[in-house]
Image 1 (cartoon, rainbow, N blue to C red):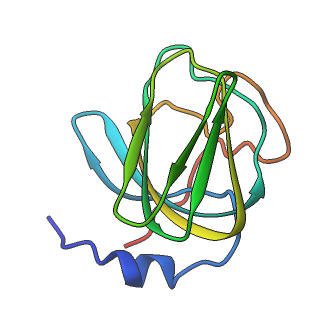
Image 2 (spheres, rainbow, N blue to C red; image 1 turned 135 degrees about the vertical axis):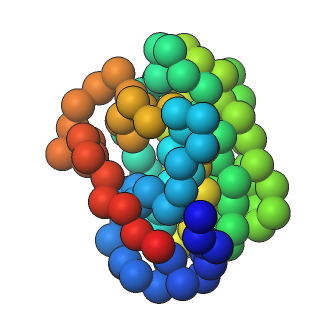
Length: 120
């Protein structure tokens, strides 16, 4: 049982779109990631996905609308809903999702991270 310092975690990496595991609970991973630019359209057929913005402004494009999140705000993309995270400048996010969840959901691309690194 360790205290997780998010600022220290974000200080351990600089790459974008590569989630890192910082904690686990009840079969869920708590991940941190730096985002920049446009991600791939995808969905998670069996899992909901929570985005919690720590810094920056994140837009989550859905097929019928765009959700804009600023620091301290979070949004849950329900399972099966196609979405694409987009940001013009760097965003730091915390993600909550089942441990089996791939970051690219139902598609495999060069951005797919099969086994995220663990940092503390």
